[in-house]
Length: 85
Image (cartoon, rainbow, N blue to C red; front, top):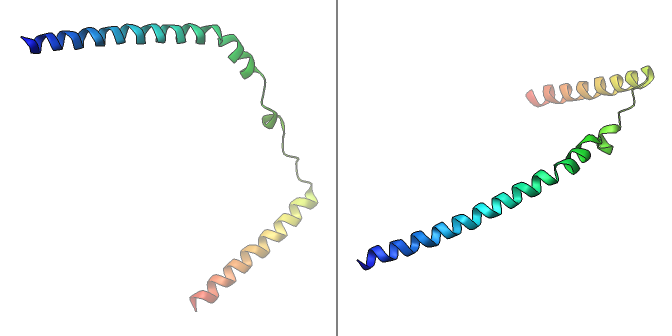
């Protein structure tokens, strides 16, 4: 019988905790619903980093980059061939 009493007490305590947790969940939900407009306003503004766009390369810059990359890959290919021997 004592075992049943302990279980009933445990059940009551858990039900009380559940009621408290449900109340906290409801309070948080209400708070989130109330602050939704502020969140939407923050999202509406684009981030500063998103506004910056990369400057397009001029034809001369593209040609110089191409020359550098050709030299890079030629050196890498030569190193690989040398390592194979």
